[in-house]
Image 1 (spheres, helix red, strand yellow):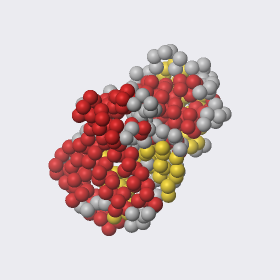
Image 2: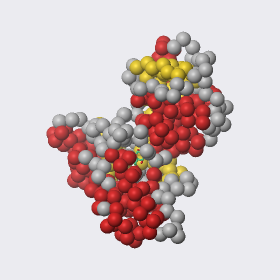
Image 3: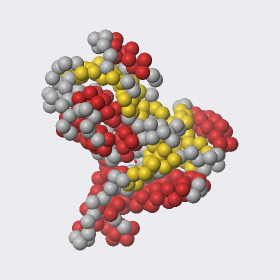
Image 4: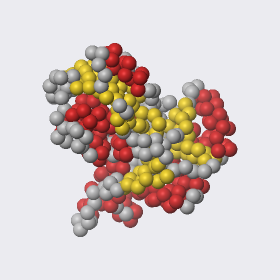
Length: 387
Ligand code: GLA
């Protein structure tokens, strides 16, 4: 995907004039899944696939003329009509216009055409890439770039919550906005402090295998998982009126055991995964600093097990890909992102890479009669203006 491609479509679909072009990436996450909305740690990085949008004010008060180049779909709407567009892709534009306005940006009507090469439904956060790309554009076009990066992250999250029906955490928007080439980021989702970690494991590659089972978070059991976690926190807080319990991050293993019977096995097991995942992210950080990739990989397998058996967000196809990775001697492998489909992320020794990818694709096709897709991970920069 390049600027000229997006520009040619923008010119064709609107009045022949050019605007400014913005880009934002999708993300990977090495470890720390479903921890963000629990106040825990995540370890994402931006990738070299994302969304590119050309935007230009159109002189109207509040009419947005939007064109999805990939879907060849055009939607015009008034973002002040209190309803917004029905097309799900256009709701990200609608939501970001309103959320940026709430942040004090005097948003007016604009034209926008955009395209993406981050695979949809692969768990690589195409939606966060859209939000941060549109947020970056609106900030530049109407807001003199006064809105901070963190506020763009939060506007993206609010768009998901308020207009798209997904009560997500902040990992995806954070990674898309703050990403840096060659660096993963460890984010503490409670304090919002983060650190960049150079990630260039000598002798290993990170590769994603897309099951091509479409992961869809809206209206999905994703929100149920979040509710389970919040329920456990409420029970623990009620037992300990002296403490401050906002998320599972504030809860200990002992406190979780205390409420086991009252919250029931399902919520207990889900919370059990989250507490374990918090510890795993920290262990992975230590292992990375020590250059101990065997431990990193071991933790990735543990996360897969937890996501599959405790948090219950895997599916047959992802479990199968994980088993194959194990059989092939891959150092670490797990579901990446929200789950319910999408990709596995694999840490593979250079010398095993070719045979693993080949075997995984072959066996996957034999079993499910569906082709898996392979993406090499290139850790890249976050949201930016291209021209
Ligand atoms: C989705 C959400 C994120 C996060 C992950 C799971 O990608 O958007 O906020 O919760 O799932 O780690």
